[in-house]
Every structure is written in structure tokens, then in C-alpha cells.
Amino acid sequence: MTADTPQERTPLYDAEFAADPAGVYAKLRAYGTFAPVELSPGVPATLVLGYDAALEVLRDPGTFPKNPQRWEKSLPPDCPVLPIMGYRPSALYTDGSVHARLRGAITDALGRVDTTVLRDYVEQSADTLIDRFAGDGQADLRGQYAKALPLLVFNRLFGCPPDIADRLVSGMIGIFELVDAEKANAELTRGVMELIALKRARPAADVTSWLLSHPAELTDQEMADQLVLLMGAGTEPEQNLIANTLRLLLSDERFAGDLTGGSLPVEDALDEVLWTDPPMANFGFTYPERDLERDGVLLPADQPVAVSFGAANTDPSKAHGQRAGNRAHLAWSVGPHTCPAKGHARLIASVAIEKLLDRLPDMDLAVAVDELQWRPGPFHRALSALPVRFSPVPVMAAGPPAEHPVTADPAPVAMSPTTSETHDQAPRRRRPHLTRWWRG
Image (cartoon, rainbow, N blue to C red; front, side, top):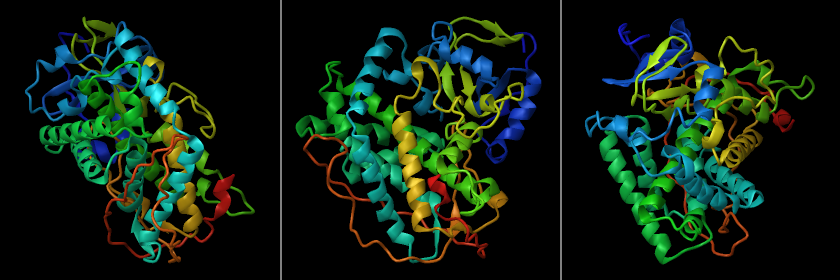
């Protein structure tokens, strides 16, 4: 696409794209490595489809900077993608020394989390949620489990009281799904500022307090923007990673062998999803400061260049080979903006899935896999629901998660689970051989 050859842009926000992103990527590859798309009505962007091209963009912030301020001046204030793409002084939207300072504070704070205690807390939170539907014989694993579990962990990690956390998650969901995004962004901002005020008054052993006390001396505004970044990465993408992996485990025979025949474990299923259905399918936005040409395509100055992790991971020109154990995917990004919490995110997802399979070993989808619906949105790969059925099992009756922080520091943070959704189920198709094979 050159300056004098305008092209029709493919929308990434409609139900057609949500239902079959792989098919859309295949059509877009007719343009080459870069393709014209629309992120919301009237918001053009260029989508990076190739694996090598994605590496080039993500590793070269000098040519492909992250700051969107010049771009966003061209948009109306109520543009639905602005709350997630608009500039914030956070590690996601900065480069150079500013990025290094902000990312350093985040990395240091996350580095204080005791992963052994975090694993124990994820298991306890999982048991609490499973107990709510264990005796029912049916559940919506997206609404009642995958959506709720990251919130429990987020509350604990960040010392966030449930009343604030509920509003934070509600705001973040609205931003990702482009549903009254301006109002959702305002709700999110208010909740984050309340959390910062609370932790300045009563610091504890949590990530929020550690960020506040970091030598980087973050201002309240910087604190708010780092927390929005961490929450955005720690809730919506995490629930999608859990749900998408459970979908794969319950629908693909490669992952459902019996004890004698063998099968691929949970870690391999996570790798498969991170390759083929990454929870953030299109992100990694950059904004060239001058017109660029790549592979015969014009990349206009100050217009978003979005990396499609989903398309780059499945680039047909690359032979990625066996995906089990292969972690060369781009789901966590690469370069200076690689996700600093990918180890925590993977641990939470794997423990959550293992606990569920352990408690409900004969679980199966309650509908055919092709009847599952995907939520529209240009950024995420997200199920609307994941209905399952299983043999009812007794509750653990262990009470709520233990009151201890996810660190060796002494101050605990109180929290409670959120309410969850229900989903009507279709007649059950049993899979009794889904047992403890996942331990590998």
C-alpha cells in the first residue's frame, strides 16, 4: 500500500473477526507482511503480520517509538480505543531513560513476590471458587472461575480491598471491550487513585506499597498509570489465558489421553495457546514519527503500527515446529517492552488449571467446541463463556484463602472473592479419561 493507492481497511472490532481471526489474518496476508486495518470505526492502523517484521518493530524503539501523543491529537475525546491506547506516563508508552526508570520500579516490586507463597494462594483461591459450583455438576468456567481467579490474586498482590477491586475490573473490562470506554476509563481512574491514597496512609506488604516506597519516587499520577498497566496485564489477559487453555484441554484429543496412553501436560497446552490463541492477540502499538516504507507498504507518520502476536506466531513462512516446550512465541512481546510479569502470569494460569483438573477429573465441555462464542474486540482473544459439566464432588470446606501476604514481609491484606456468573448448559458429553495425566 503506497500513499497514492488507498486500500479498504479490515475491521478488527466486529463479530466476524472475533469468530475467525485466523481466517482474517490469512486474507490480510495478501497485502504482505503489513496490512491496513481499522481498530474502531474511523481509526486506521497498520497490522504487522510477519514474525520477523514483528521482531524488527518490537526491538527498534528508535524507529518505532511507543508514545502515542501526536497520534491521539487527531482523535475525538470519546474515541473508544483511546482509554487503552491513549498516552499514560507508564512503562508501556515510554522509551529510553523514562521507560527504564518506570520499568525498574515495576520489576523490583514484582521481584519481591514470593512465588512459593503465590502458588499456595492461587491453589487456595482456586479451591474457594471451585467449591461454589463443585456440587452443581455444571459451571461456566470463564465467568465463575477464569474471570474471578485473577481478581483474587490481584487483590492479594496489590493489597486492594474488594470494593475498589470490583470497580477497577469493571472499568478495565469496559475499556477492553470498547463498551462506553470513556466512562469505564473514568471509573478505573477513580478506583486506582483511591487505592493509592489508601496505601500512602496504610502501607503494607504488597506491590502497591512497594511501588510507592521505591527509590524511583513515583508521583501519584505515575503510580496510577503503572497500576493501570499492571492491572490491565494481570486481569483480562490472565483470564483469557486460563480460559483459552481450558478450552484447548477439553476439546483437543492430543491433550486428553488416559493414564496408560499418555498425553501432553498443562505446560504444553499453555505453550500451544500462547502460540495460536494468545490472550492479547493484537497489541504492541508503536507510532513512527516519520513516514516509513516496509516491504513496499507505506507506514504513515503518527499512525499506529500494531503488532499482531496471533498472526506473527502463525506466520506460514516460518516453520516453528513442535510447539510443546517451544517458547519462541511473541505472546509476551520481545525487546525492551517484554512483559515483566510473564513468570507470575504463567504460574497463576498453570496452577489454576491443574487445581481445576484435579478437583473435577471428568469435566467436559457442555456444548460443541464450535458453538463457543468469542467476545468482539481488536485487542484480545477472549471467550464469552466456557460451559462445562462434570460429576458433582464434595466441597473442600476449607474456608476462604488464608490471610497471609504473597511475600516474606509481615503485613497481611484482607480480601474476599467476587460473585460469579452462571450459564445454561447443553446435554453433557462425558470424557471420563481426563484425569491426573496433566502432572506430566
